[in-house]
Image 1: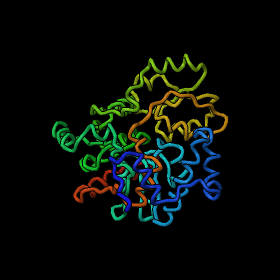
Image 2 (image 1 turned 135 degrees about the horizontal axis):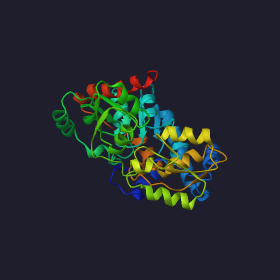
Image 3 (image 1 turned 30 degrees about the vertical axis):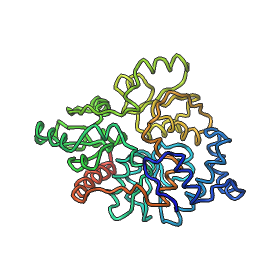
Length: 355
């Protein structure tokens, strides 16, 4: 009898269980079916690893059809997930918008836990799975619903704009959500000359530079981006003369002040594709530059990134097992669904308004 694989099972045991449940041989049929994926990411995946990855990709794609499932993957996922099995890819805003359009009965969220919660909020009747429930977020864990209520008491009447990198409980205490791509637009759209913008202090500080409104911040930060410094950018410029350097607005303002472009993951991708610099450094999560490189010819991508340990908890093995067993289903307490969903839906509606 196959033992259920849970979040604390060692990867070696997980692979053993998968081998019992699936034929994971690198057959001619598997090779043919997955060849287009490999051709696209061959510069990012060692060829020696492909015979181990391809059968997993093959089985995941087969099982998606059988289970009526769709896979949403964030830009920080590895190329084998991003190009191999994902049906919808994007940043937090793109995934939130696309989640409202999903027709499949099962959603597998290849991202971190708050993203899976957001998909559940927008699709309360659907089954939402996350392959590893330990895939958390330093931002989401930096603030609680009680903290938001305390801030409201301190600043009565001031609207709360909450980054989507937050729990459903925090979203439920929020007037409207935002992402890094629409933060300024949302701040400008809410009423009043003062706004509470939580929990990312650096996104709030970078947004504050672009608006006349006073922004009250919270001391949260993304562990991928908060460690970058202006000194790091200077070292990158010395190491890679002439290279363009772009960064995510979750980086400290001192970093944003000295890079060539700053924007959300989607904006960074669009910038690279439109500008087509000869060489570029993406100051963000490492897999993102791998994914952009796979679809951008003529641009050399240089390393200057950090790895998100939470995103990297998601792998092909646990995606397949989650689909197979229904393990790691994401639920949201009933009393939180309506208010949290309203905050996300307000964001989507405000984002769609003409600027």
